Length: 311
Image 1 (cartoon, rainbow, N blue to C red):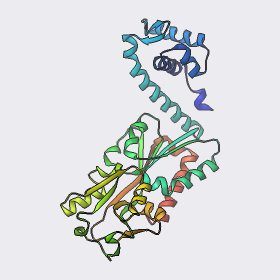
Image 2 (image 1 turned 90 degrees about the horizontal axis):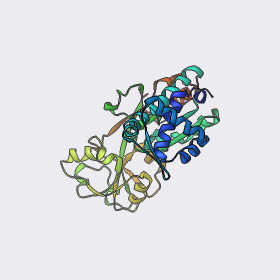
Image 3 (image 1 turned 90 degrees about the vertical axis):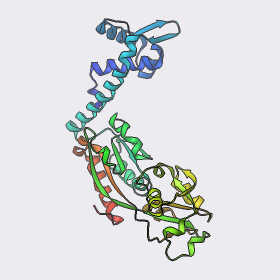
């Protein structure tokens, strides 16, 4: 593959320096890099010769960085990250395809639509190395900047849109809903008011709860009262399970609740919960030239239309 062929001698030297620095042993680093120990020893010597200074202290217990090595290490990590990104992007441009695709998605897209989309992508491109994870997308942007993630699908965060080399395409708006168990006192009401939730206990989806634009923050602002959070969880499935007991309320995205709610749960009609989340995909600009990305975008837009999201 072009990506493997393109790793030039400079990047290879940086990679070997970082491997030795992180392992503290030339022998362990050689094993990690799958090269011979003499070859790695020679590479380290050549790097030091180029800088005209010792980068490692050697002893029978291994190697440690000298002050010069400690100065070089963070720079080398950054070079390795940027160099790897450059190799992948040039490969995208030359071949119109990618060897790996690392994707992070938020809860609504991740659980409701992406499993089928990812399965279709793998079926169409069986050689593609796909890594797919679901989680808080706002935490993934540093990984995208470092070249570790290729695309992020979830909430659009205005302050993240200026990342160098990264584009954002809006997919649509997802609404939140208030959920309770059938045994909850509010389950019988035809419409729940903001006053009705005063004193009620909530299960909070933790990645959202402290964000100023979260549905719980919006509700607290509307009622001018603190929302009583009984428990926080990073699992939306666990939130629904706990709410089904009849003792709690929770607020989650409508697509997720519609897909996973069971008979003992009820979506409550309200006259106050108008929380909407703009969603989209952040991606490396050169991905638009690749066939896997084109298929991904077609499937994302189809999924958005299927739940009446404005495209």
